[in-house]
Image 1 (cartoon, one colour):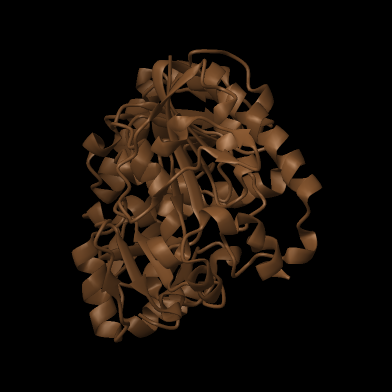
Image 2 (cartoon, one colour):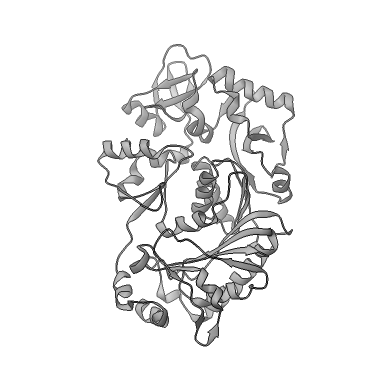
Amino acid sequence: MMFEIFRRYEEFIPEFQEFLRELTNFPSLSIRINTLKTSKKRLKERFDEYGILYEEVRWYEDALISEERVTHTLEYYLGDLYVQELASMIPPLILNPPENSLVLDMCAAPGSKTTQISQMMRNKGHIIANDVEMERVKILRSNVKQMGCLNVTITRKDGRKIRGEDLFDFVLVDAPCSGEGRHWKFNPSLWSEEKILSLSKLQSSLLSSAIRLVKRGGIIVYSTCTYAPEENERVISKFLDKVEVLRINSPVRALPGITEWREEFYGDEMKKTIRLFPHISGTGGFFIAKLKKI
Amino acid sequence: MQSLRKFDENERREILKFFSEVYGIPPKIFQDYELLARGKNVWMVSSSHLNKVFEMKPEFVGTMILRRGIKFWKPTTAFVTLFGHLATKNFIEVSKEEALEFLKGGSIEKRENLTYPHVIIRYRGRALGCGYLGKRKILSEIPSKLREIPRIL
């Protein structure tokens, strides 16, 4: 059934059969080295001692591909590493806030991107990590504490209703989505076009709020882990009078966003956004747009 | 929820003095951070943009680093795993067997030259948490929900 659902995207996914074949594979386990607590050299020395195998990730110094046993190590227990899917490490790298920035991570739980941004800012500046559900906030809090983040403040609000305007230097909107890009966790029985349209409305409201909250000239990174254009290009195309779409230098091989689909025109600006596919990028599926408030 | 308040200069100095005098942890680690009180507990957070942060009515600000008991103050596990390697006093290095015992909530042998009831426990230079200096043994103070025992160390 998953294959049938994904056939709706056949016209914009090149080498479609290869894409479908890739969906039968699980991704390798990837970890982010928590540089707030350890160093890559030190962690690699421990893995060598334990006989744990790992590979470098050529586009990110702080990431390694490793094996399941890392979650049984003392270093995992101490918060020296975070198990994080490779594609999920890319939006913070594109946001790339300087150390003393004020950042909003609007849909932050469980905290993988928040804690990555925290280490990128070397525990300086400030990140507001927000999520709406208490249970998710508890997990976020636990991860922030475990990873030793001292530049993170947690709020529990509906992202659409956060008050204020022109407050933040950077905003990350890693929006709730239909999750098609995480094919190893994707449940086709929960998928429907109605759900996608409902998510699209939510995502548009979240992005609208992010545009209000970021300073003029400030940067928003909008990302989802799904292929549906309704949740990606359609959302961005609604705000082209308020933001400039910036070209992304993708650290992995990626395709540009699509300019039209099913007789809906999203605009040539979408070519500056990126789409990741497992058979092309070596990651889960992702969509990422980088926007500057006009 | 109890409200947060900033410490005044004297209170802040007292907390920095505690870490310095008891553990030898240098005050400079706190220089870019604000210390906040919530009840008797002390929280540490980046001082950047703090006024704007307070306007957001946060649930949690930074990380709790110190519990101020009536008789003795105790650094939290979160603080110790981040800064405990800098301690020059009131810490002990433990063996692999002792580390495992400590992490599962057990006790370890006492050492000489310990002057404070909450002792930082280190294994191969990495701080694991605090132990309580009992009459005969040092008792693990690792919170019960963190007592997962790593199989590889």
